[in-house]
Image (cartoon, rainbow, N blue to C red; front, top):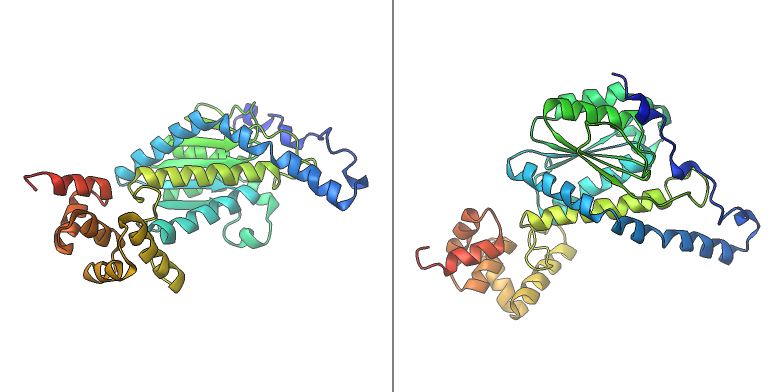
Length: 308
């Protein structure tokens, strides 16, 4: 596979020298840190400018998941590591199937710890992974600071070819990968504090975008109630305590009442919550949740309907 020529030769602002940091090696420690912090403060505004396009990506991902498909992250270096972390945190936080979000990192799992810079130039490897693991109807989000990483673009090309929807998140507002990308989320964070060190502002922007993206997808998929993590998997003492606090905060009831409801629901937080909010017994609450695809508000609406 050959990555389109225009994608390979796009200049990236992340590689340019930052005129605001040329004397950084002459600053005191505190002044140096203030300089870095001043640059970091540019990230949220840059992310805010991309929110309409990020919203499109969120809706495409939700559509894929609702149809039984998957979301794929594809990245290399810092981008791939951030994507891997985001995907890994979703199952325990929202109790989603582990294959809802799949991370593909150039060089494989070994490159997460030990950098394998050459792997990002292998467009065929990216294409092979998505051809093997992807399918029509999936959603694939590629992440690359420059907007031109061959491994990522090769994966996006392959994803488009098999019928998946695609998006590219990058730090290059002039990136033009080709018509195999449905949505471009270009966060213009400008030159880095240290020229080309994209683990800095570009990486921070990717972390912000990924967290917002996956959180929005989880909310739209009904994995929350209000701003509470009602789908959390209580696998340790901290999370078991959080489960009870969530029930208390959502219902205003005592911890003892919440513990009793959780026991009646066999430890299922959502069932306990619907049981407490609706007043129906736990079994009926569980059936309502099944009919509502696990969405608490929809389950409560069903239970309030006379025919249910």
